[in-house]
Amino acid sequence: MYPIAVARGVTAEMNILMLVNPRSGIGEPPLYDYVAELGRRGSEVTVRFMREDVQLARLLRDVDAYDRVVAVGGDGTISSVAYAMRNTGIPLVPYPSGTANLFAHNVGIPQDPYKLAELTAEGIPASLDIGELDHNGGVGFLVMAGAGFDAALMDRARDLKPLLGEGAYFLAAAQTLLPTVASFVLRLDGRQVMTEGIAVVLVNLARIQFDLSVTHGSDAQDGMLEVVIVKPHSVAGLLPAIWAALLDRLGEHAERPGLEIHSAREVEVVSEPRLPIQSDGEIIAQNTPLTARVLPGAATVVIPGGSLPVDSFPVSDGRA
Image (cartoon, rainbow, N blue to C red; front, side, top):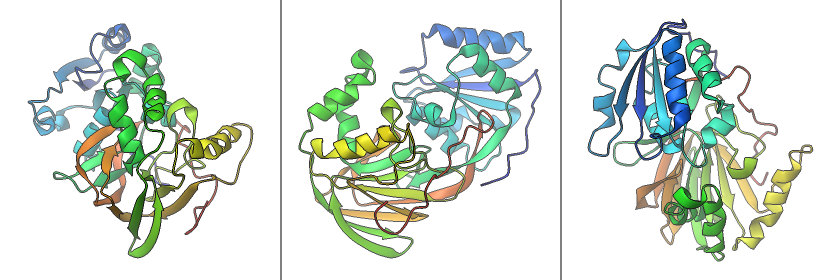
């Protein structure tokens, strides 16, 4: 675990840069309440929109002049801003306005705009790991990235989310009852693993939709990624793993049936056939192979104190 980052500008009067994804962060009444509450506290807020024709680096060109940066959007938006700001030490505040908002669920970001404004103004930043994919100069993820079934699921759900919300993932799963089964060759910190399954998921934070955990918690401050191979050949075959995740709410359930779990700092994934890739819910414009690594403590994020999940069980070199 890293030490808490040095607080930067923790005062009621702050200069705040807000980056808004127009696809998911505009037109929400709570967003107006949030900005109004920041203004009531004496903060100045500069708003810039993350249009597809504007590079993120340009929006962050003068980021050193701000005490906080607020990213308004879904997991992909928040991760992309965190990655663009990596190793700067400038605190990022996530404003979750996407469909799943997995990062917010994992670290306890409040949904109430007034509580979020309080956290923005008074919260102490913490250093978190970022996962990095080798694609187009680098793609960062705060929650998880993957190849195979999870990417296909998110691709199918993309057009359904505006109508169905999180229910889009159920419908997408129903449309993918027999996912592609692939043979995988993994290199985990130089160690080779040969296996098969329908997906490989790289986990920084483990909680997914409907408050289920892929692994027994995951520590975003340990400088490691959990590498999860999803073994069942059908959606129905995932039911024992889902049941085990539900049992975690009642007590510790040591096994994750159907999941092979490793840990590593650097990961290479080769598959036959080649599979689609996603990063925090965003489809990457390439198929496997993929190369990824963890960037320890590269993100500085304002989160509620004591809210970070940590690994409940050590991860071995074999099955969990």
